[in-house]
Image (cartoon, rainbow, N blue to C red; front, side, top):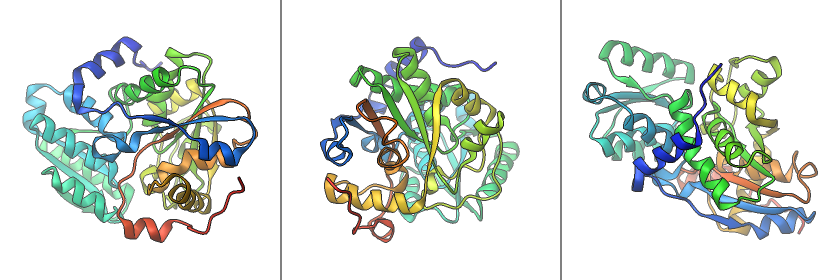
Length: 328
């Protein structure tokens, strides 16, 4: 059995972090509703307006906040394609802790620059699997604390602050749709939302080229995938952990997949109709609502979690399908 955060623990962390995290806004997404045209009420949780540009700041801050004086003195390490790296660097600077971050060679240049701007030392690895091995070596050899990108109760408490906000801001929600990488976001959000609103259902969305959680839930245990192949690199976790798998098995109604073409079309449409230039992971929940969840959630009150975005314009414009058309 895993130990999940309680609402009291989540509230206490939110109070402790104070202005280090932003209570990000929710808006009624009438542009999305007009396309669905099936009575669905849609709210968008704009977490890309969080410090560092993604939800990852919540988990990283929760982790560094909880370190002992000796652990802070030794410093931290982390592994990431970018968003978690930036968040760990931000949290480390906030608490005056040294950070040595492993980033993959494919990391978006804007994320590398953002990570460096918070004063972190950056080292590079070729693949995601190599990056995890390198970070583990740094932890072992240098005594640094590993700030995991998605695993464990501390991360779930941090992302739980986001779930608590959703439950407070849209208390009547029937469903929340969350993009999934390693499962730290959806696990924490689902736990908090369902503690506050047990009738709300949580749906997870993965890229078809990075479906470790879908495979884990289908097989009944945490599994790894051999390769990650998606433009949504921040959702490219090569495995689910035992903790995140258990949280999802307990709280997630269903997992669905979207492919890269759907993400590209959604990026273009979101830019055109909602005036938001955001990364693939950020539009995954909306792509799922337009696609595999459209009929299943018809007529309900739905929150799409726009989880974050750190991307330069050149990369965004090379991915986004600006000719995407959805009939209103």
